[in-house]
Length: 447
Image 1 (cartoon, rainbow, N blue to C red):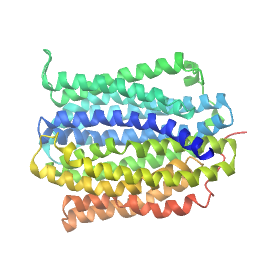
Image 2: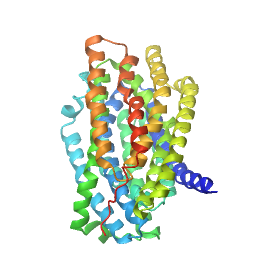
Image 3: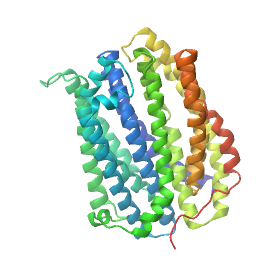
């Protein structure tokens, strides 16, 4: 019965999060497919723009995760007022960061996008998309932080509903604005950007209404976003900055990977864009389980129940491996079917097939090490360990190795891609040792 209750709790948290992620990534997949009908230049342009958004996205995820780790412990001990204080700090930080990104992309798009490719035609097309989509950064950031706040208190279904709303709006507007249906002008990639902007605005308005007027657990008010608790800010900086820095550096890592791939040619760039988007949709169960386990472990750490924490860690590790194997098998079986929806060259399809085969293997490692390190170890309080581990693997191994293979050895795209993903397997060694020592349980709350 104890096992059953734990697995039901994990499922009830993970399933809505996974479905939310699936819908969110399906928006990207739909964009990918629709823009792909315009040709490889257009799909490469949107991919280049997405690399800028990856940094912002990882920064916002870092802020939300830092908020979630600290607030979950406060929620576990029943301190509602400090949960509100942590949320207010996260909102202020995300506003500053999102506005900074908007300034950079809107006013200096050629310089920013030029970091990822030297193809003038791709950059020119990408600027059309970037200048419009940059206005969505603030709405995306605020929505993400508020949804993360709801996860702290185990309210996860609202994220699913909002993602579904955003998906429907985005798909309909994509069809209208990209191709010029229903009397609208044919805008191409600019239409895809406009559709994303509108869907983000609607999503933000909906989550704001929910947290201010519908939620009955926290009962947030606008004044909670304005006030500042200096003691909480100090702890947010102490424990939250390593989390944010880790996700920021991970985002930079992804964009550096994008810059390496972007110089392998339009076909390789398009193939990586397609493979990553398809992988994101298929692997939602992995990320949903990781997020759900972090909530459960964070609450348990706040309660200070060490026996229960050890029990959770043992049981969850088995779940992570099972989910990884199932995800890898599904991705391998579905890859040819999903690629059939794209109108791209045979060379691009061939490269994408190889990349998806690589991902179907490395996702097993991702499911275990990511969920263990960020879902258990980091949520338990060992925020600095996860940051240092990522720095060593990414900047000491992945980036140098893939750079050498791409530009000095001249290896094919799938070999370079394998080098970019090799840490997902190697980190499993660290994860299995660290999590079973149980020295990662730390108190992050103020008495």
